[in-house]
Length: 287
Length: 267
Image (cartoon, chains in turn blue, orange):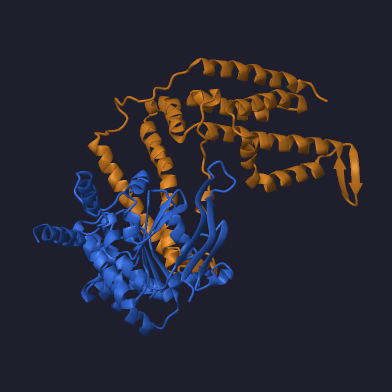
């Protein structure tokens, strides 16, 4: 079965023909399988946001193609809008897009645009709200009365309510406190696990990536520089640093330990793994 | 889409034209407009043309960029040309059915087009080579005598500066919100006028909220830095007339003088 999303020679140039011309994407070939949890990382301006806006047809490729389920999304211009219901995109600071009188109506905006039945919309709104942890009572309040973290979750629910096959989130935890971050990530993880939705998570936080993503894509200057599991990617700590990125803090600790002469394998990227490795070493030494 | 709107676009540079005092640039532009309307006959446009070409050449702004400003007005320019061509009485040049084109008509039409194109390109040169901040600074200083009759010159200039400063920010913001709503299936492009107006609500509500939030934050930030109006306020960039301004003034006066002198020479 072909991947759910595929790009072929995708390039994008902003401001073509003006003095401000800038190549944002350069010949991207990418294939994403159904049910994958992709972590997309890259320095600011590396083309991540441009790339994800191509995947749901908000931007039109300057060159190359974007295929969803093996079909070019720009083949029929009238169908591009349907792609946006299948590939849900949550922008950075999505709470800035809330506009309705009640949270309920705001979450219902997407499903309403899909032209669904009223009962179907209601079902989806309740389901999406439950997924992100918005109570029924909050649903009928103004979105502007909610706290920052709740607003963010309500906005994410607005995309989830469309039941997209692919859920793309651009830095969904930016500007939240650690509890709020974990809350949102846990919801996304659950959603991925239960629904088997394909998830693409854009973030600057290496810990978030290490703990969640089944595959990591690293972008630099509009190109894909690396792709692979956390193990593959974080073993190139030097290259990542050159790109203005980092490895998870715990990996940094292990790298330092090895520099200090300890015989440890630095391919560790979560605290859990680190704990097991250290305990194992301890046992080996004392056995 | 929204990004294509150019509002007094500024092209940074370090040419004599860029370095000129904004006050001098504003005054010369005003003088230039007056001269354009005072000039009469092709000969008197010649010195003004030399003035404009020199200014554009010195500013190092590509002629194609300068001419782009003319594009939206092509219709008006053509209409003016055609009307002048047909309705100026004089010696007959061509006669097609009831329409007569006279020699004088062609001549006037040509001068009209020349005048409008020069008017647009000349004034665009001002905004192309002067940053909005410098421009408002210049306007504030030029208008400062009006303070005597209680015109709140500083406040007006500050309002203009802030408005100009936030135009790109708000355009960017509107673009982002539009994309976010499009990602939820909003449709801004099709449907009747009423449908399209309704479709703007999901864009306008968040945009207004963010504009108010920004205004509030900016007001607090200004208060935190003890902003209390124009009284006793000094400037980081002092406006000073330099040699460039003097040269520009002399050059302009000479050429414009020539233009006026040539008025009486008819061909």
